[in-house]
Length: 342
Ligand code: NDP
Image (tube, rainbow, N blue to C red; front, side, top):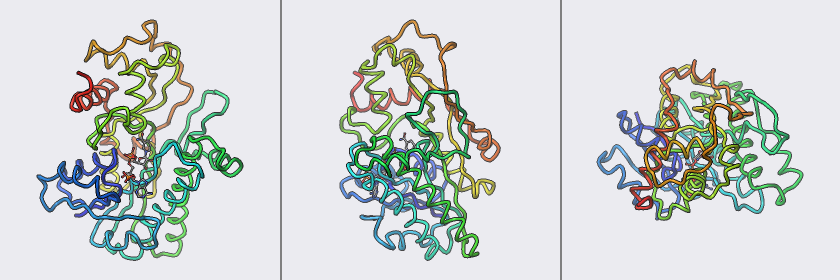
């Protein structure tokens, strides 16, 4: 069957495309900037006409995806603005929400063969940031409503993180609302799955001309671990939850194959980390990495926030997460390829 992947030049999308092609699927990828197409094409040239790129220049336009959903059996919707410089929160919210609804509406009207739409949401749609630190377990039942309130009350003055979080939360809420509404009407021939990853790390295949311009959060890896910019205190105390981009890509593919996944919101996380854990992993492979906080003890590190992935384990039992060492090695190898860790 043929699968549509939106935002085909993105960090996560390229790994989804690679995983799909390796499993024998045909792939259509949508892309909006012509200048980024050549690199993606060259990555998958060996697959011949099993891989095609299609231009979707403005996905907020009514019917933008009408032509590209025809003949596909599943859709992986990853495209969404990832930016920390928006002035008006709507610069992020509008494309995030309208892109998601646009894909779903086109699938409803023209995707006669579509059985499943997988949407890349984010931990940003689950976890509330900037609240008083407390021990908390988040699950698929949680929504980051704080970010919506923040952009509603503060507008342009809202924190950049809250603007991004609000765009992801509102886009995912819109997808579920669409799904429930259409299901009730009995029109729907497909179901949806949303995947909720925290920080995505690991090797990158997209074009990266300068590692200081890497996507978030690989740019944090570059600054904190390679460049040694983080303080010892931050290395031992700051971090979060992570997943390897290759595991997230596999989760996207398993989510179209696994009947059980339909209608589910799935947290995809390998677990917690502090930055010093990644420093320590990196130093196993390269003595040139700055030592960071040598008195850090992973046993006594305090992880206040955890993501409960137990439902995902039941739905996607084939998904196994790479270790922090593996993920770190992948990033070091990508840097080496770009000539930076010389
Ligand atoms: P990238 O920035 O690498 O990819 C984003 C993709 O979306 C690009 O293809 C980009 O196109 C496209 N896009 C952005 N805005 C628009 C728009 N207005 N119209 C059309 N296309 C657009 O990000 P990632 O691969 O990291 O992210 C992919 C998805 O994963 C996103 O939905 C993101 O929210 C989610 N995610 C990512 C995490 C991470 O740590 N990386 C963590 C959790 C969730 P262009 O290159 O032309 O701008």
